[in-house]
Image (cartoon, rainbow, N blue to C red; front, side, top):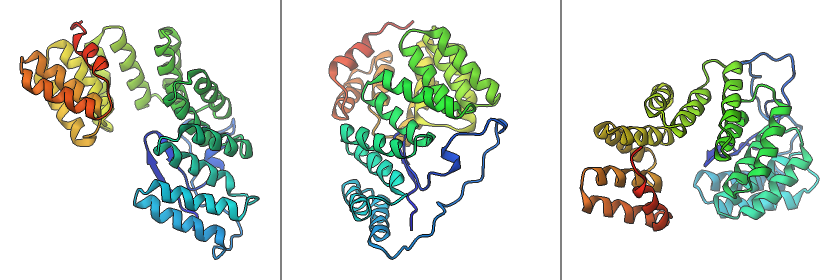
Length: 300
């Protein structure tokens, strides 16, 4: 059974490369999505190829990425000309990304894209990986390609807007976020993007309002962390504490949330608690230099 469906860290282990992952026809209206269906093919699921894929699925469910990768590689080796191999290679790349094997992941995403060059999901996965690797121009190229293939894709426009902000081009970012609004006036990505833009421009009250609009519908730790940061700068310490606590319940291993709580404890003159949060953030992968710089930023 070809049923690899899992998401983590911005990349997707996907179960089909069909029309929903390809170019959207120009006649398709915003908000219309084609019904997703299984990968359609005349398959003999008793072959070593599909038996290996079934084994990989078992290890994906148990989060054993190395074993899942090995079984998908066995599937590919068993039938290197199988038309499903774009999907297999993409999922191998995603599993490699989970393991930190970023160079190998890029190679396999690229091979998969060569086989199915209009697969939007694969381009989005590779673009997100390029961002993780700090290869920002290559990420931009992939996101722009997605916009060409799918004129209604809001995810790529949001990512391009965030990257524009990172480059200091706030006007470009605003234009991209407004494109999202034109595609979908109720898009959470529009409100989130504009929230980030207002936060960058020092309008923390408006940024918090925009983050709140998205949080009411679909709360996540990143949004809560951004709103908490705005609250800290505004001196709304109790509100910031509530957001940080809720975010940590969602993602207790996110080091940036401990930096935010260290900021909160600094503002409350709770030195011991601040030091504990700093140590936790370091244990989760952040450098002390980065943390100290964040804590020394003046309240704007």
